[in-house]
Length: 276
Image 1: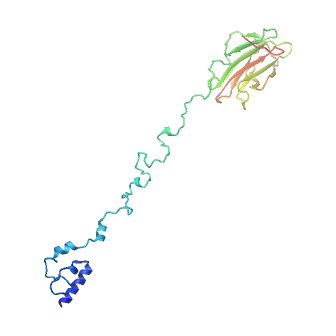
Image 2 (image 1 turned 180 degrees about the vertical axis):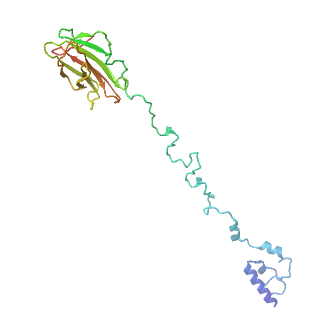
Image 3 (image 1 turned 90 degrees about the vertical axis):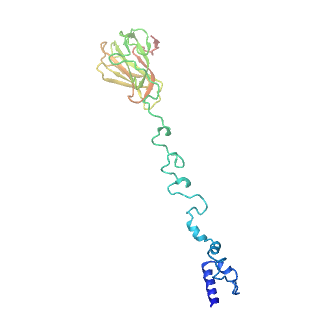
């Protein structure tokens, strides 16, 4: 009976993983070296506690969950270890995509509109249809042709066979100049020659032109820069008639040009314009 109990207890110890039951001291009966259940000295509770194996499986369940590779724990709310931008990160770290900040106009590299013209501008000289830049009178017996540079605002007409007027216009600021003349005709209707020369004659469309107006303001002819010399007959002209030439650039075209307007009334073989 005792042998049965010892064998039962040994099996029970082995099933529970308690090795101390099977390795205890001989109790004197010579039965397989199994310990005596009555011996509370060497094989009591204290000895069992000292010899209990460490349950690695249970302890592992108590460990905090981490990266199986040994890396740092990852907080799903923190993208710092993943290289992904943290939407709450405003310090430009890994969340910087290189896109310009819409609140920062300096990253676009674009210049602001100052509202200033892009090229040179002609000063507004103040001439108008009622106050032309220069006034001339053409007669067959007048003195030699003259050249005038810039607005003269002469109250008395220059008596001459022909006139060259040199100036500049621009849009904006000073998009037109006004030249006024009268003519004393002979026995037939006079024919005059008008030429408009400018620095940018090759532009197409040409923004600079000269318009000949009669004394009622009706346009008789338009001469573009680079068109060459245009011959214009003044029908039924009298010495009391007043004609005007408006040199103009296309309004709103942001254009500047220097020009020379030449009017040959009675030079016959071409005018040699001399400074006034």
